[in-house]
View (cartoon, rainbow, N blue to C red):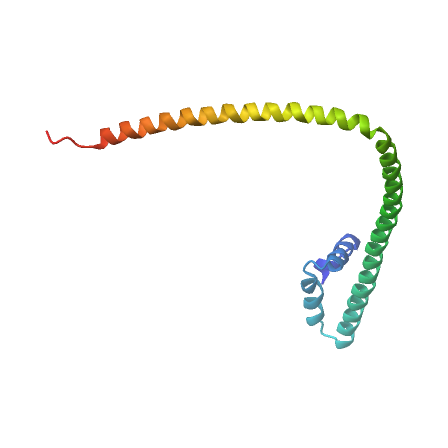
Length: 148
């Protein structure tokens, strides 16, 4: 119909709509069904089917090309990164004995600090338990009705 193919802009938008699959049945099927001439309807049907097939093949090829390019780039990057990592590990192994002693000393200090923190938390927890038990006792005595 004229509303879908009235000028170049509408035609371009309509073909893009058919390409993306957005309400393409409304754009294609209704005009084809309302054609008075059977040859014209066959021609329109043939055009849109071939349009869908060609556009689908082109889009699939574009997606495959992009994916293959990413895989090839990632493969070469991964190889270079693996080589760099191997070289860095060899250098780190030479410096390791000095680093290990320093790391162990730091870890011992951190463990002592953590033990002190745990002791402080236990003391605070004991105080909190005492306060809560006092609050529960007060609440229970307040809740008991007197017989007066």
